[in-house]
Structure formats: C-alpha cells, structure tokens
Length: 515
Image (cartoon, rainbow, N blue to C red; front, side):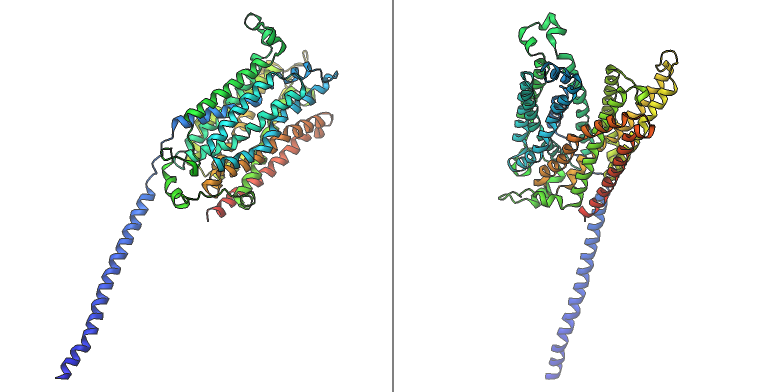
C-alpha cells in the first residue's frame, strides 16, 4: 500500500517541475516576443521624421529686435568719431586723432569683455528676463549719455557703461537655445543671426545721417542745443531704439531659465521629459563652475575656436578697409570713403542673404561640427586672395591718368564681390557655434555660463584684433619690398591655419561629450 502512494508522491514534484518549466518557457517566449515587438516599434518610431516643434513667434521676434541693439550702439559712432575727437581739441597733431578714436572704439569691447561672463552667471541664478531687461535699458541710457559728452572722459565713460550692459549678449544667446530644440533650431538660429549684420548696417547709417543736424539740415534742426551737442541726435535715436526694445522685453519675453520658468511658459516639447528627469523641483540644479566648464573638451575647443573666429573676422574687416583705402602703388585699391561704404553695405547684404536663404537648408542637411570646421578653413583664403585685387588694379592702370580703366574697375568689383562672399560664408560659423555651444552645456542650468564663457573668448579677441591687424598692416605697408609689404597676408594666413586646428578639435570633443 505504501509503495504506490510513495511512487505517486515521488512523481508529483517531477510533474510540477515539468509544468513549471513549460510555463516558464511560454512566459519567456511571450516576454521575448513582446520585447521584439517593442524594439521593432521603437525602431519604426525612431525612423519616422520628427515633427517640427512650433516656434514662439512673439518671443523670437523680440529676441531679433534685441539683437539689433548691440551692433547699432557699437557702430553708430563710427562715422563721426574722428570728427568728435577733433572737436574736443585733444591734440594739435591731426595724425594722432586716430589714437583717441581707437581708444573710444575699443572701450566698448573692453568693458563688455570684463562683464559678459558675470552677466551670464547672474542670469543662471536669477533668470534671463531681468538681466536682459536691465542690459537693454542700460545700453539705451548710456548711448544717450554719449551724445551729451563734452570731454574725452565723458565719452569713454558713456562707451564703457554701454559696453558693460551689452555684456548680456550671452544671455540672449541662452534664451534662443532654451526656446529651440533639434527640430526647429535650423530655422531659428539663421533668422536670429541675420540681425547682427542688419544692425551693423543701420548703426553707421544713423551716425552718418543724424550727426551735425543743425549744419546739415538747418531747415529742421537749427537749434542752439543741437549746435552745442552735434552728436546728440544719432545717440538719442539709437538710445530710443534700445528703450523701445526694453518695452518689447517687458511685455513679450517670457522667462526661459528652467528653474525660474512658470507653468504656462513655452517649453520645447522634446526638452520637457529630460528636464523633469534631471531637475529637482525643490532644489534647482546649480550652474557648473568655471573649472568644470573648462574641463569639458568640447567647451574648451569651442572657446579656443571662437577666439580664433572672432580674431580672424574682426581682423579681416579692419584689414579690408585699410587695404581698400591704401594707394595702388602701396598695395591697395585707392578707394574713396563712399566706395568703401558701398563695399561694406554689399557685405552686409550678402550676410543677410546667406543667413536667410542658405543656412536653414545647410543646418538641416550637414553635421554641425563638420560645417563649423569647413567655414573656419575658408579664412586663410580670405587673406591670401586679397592682394589679388591689387594685382588686377596694377595690370589695368591707364598710363595717362594713373587710375584703373573702366573695364579694370569692373573686374576689381567682381573680385571684391567674390572676396566678400567668401568672407561672409566663413562668418556663418557664428550661427553654427551657437548651436554647438547649446549642445555642449553640461546641463540646462549651465547654458548661460557656457554661453558667457565662449562669448568672453570672442570678446577678448575682438578687443585687440583691430589694433593688431591695423598695426601689422601699417608696419608691412611701409616697406617697398613686395614680400615684406605683404607680411600681413602671411601672418594672418598662418593665424587662420592655426584657427582651423582648434576647430578640428570640436568634432573630437563632441564625440567625448556624447559618450
């Protein structure tokens, strides 16, 4: 009796184990099938083109209006700064006027240099909106103050204060980065980028049109006040544009800093999930320190290449004007001021066309790091090709007049068009760099500091590049030997090639950053 019962009892565990194994096999098969289905579904989703996130038009328009202010405030003094220094009776030697003019022009960039990173850090702590609003109001008041200055100290103070408040440019870049994502940045960044060249065209036009209004337009502006302050009107108009932009900021620009954003504010759809995963609602993340940012290979590469980009671009602009103004026998083109103005205006128009019609397509189609490296590689040729214009001018001189023949002038202007197209194409690196800086930030709370650090390096380059380029050109131009006369070409071409070595590090730093 006990035998059969014992056998039955002993068979039950075996049957249970077999049933359990059968169930586990089915379960594993079902799980495997489900995972395969999920992977296939994920693959299908990833293969689908991403839907473009709609841009907040009012905020983007406000940012573009703000972007105009910095170049207008910076450049509106250029047409009359030499005359202003002459009227201050600073020296009896007219050849030394340029020294004081250069001092005034550089005071803006130097002040901006020392404050740009600090404004960015403050915006990471208290928010973007209050920093931008304070900066725009400060630029407007300082620009108006410039028109009331009656001494060199007053002019330097006004320009310096304007430069301090214009240091919020990195904060404006950060807002653009926070308003966009990978699906719409190819549209937003080029639109935003074209407003710098527009401002650089509007600024000199304001300064040249409205300076000395009592003498030039006595029918409308013959007042004692405007005779005593001949540069008040252009400064006042530029300052009012700044204050008008401040009104746009107050009414239309919403806060974009993740830790300060209100519930109803615009958030790019593809950033919401990551934001909630990485942010503690009770304790907002702290911005990365300067040491941490500089330890990131991609950020370091962007800072160094940004320095090279700003140095080469500013140096080219200064050198092109000096080259165009110099006599043909001294290696230049012997252009008059209005001819140089036409060339610069054409350069701005080319920038607008490239930013508006070419950049959106290029950003969507090509890798950003490779694009940046390609644009940086153009700079050596911008300097190398410039003396070719002088060769054309020399070959087509009319022996009777000593001036280029009409046919030669056509070829010269065709060459100028090609050279400026090349240089403005190289300047597209600025738009690409803003996207790369956005991608390089270690977290959303450090975007302002990352922008500020990169802009600091660019401002540092802009603060001394004009003096370096103009001094090098003047030194080289004083020699008769052709190789020494074009020493500036060789030096700037070598610097350009060095700049391309920095830009090549971006791709490497990007690979490390995304591991």
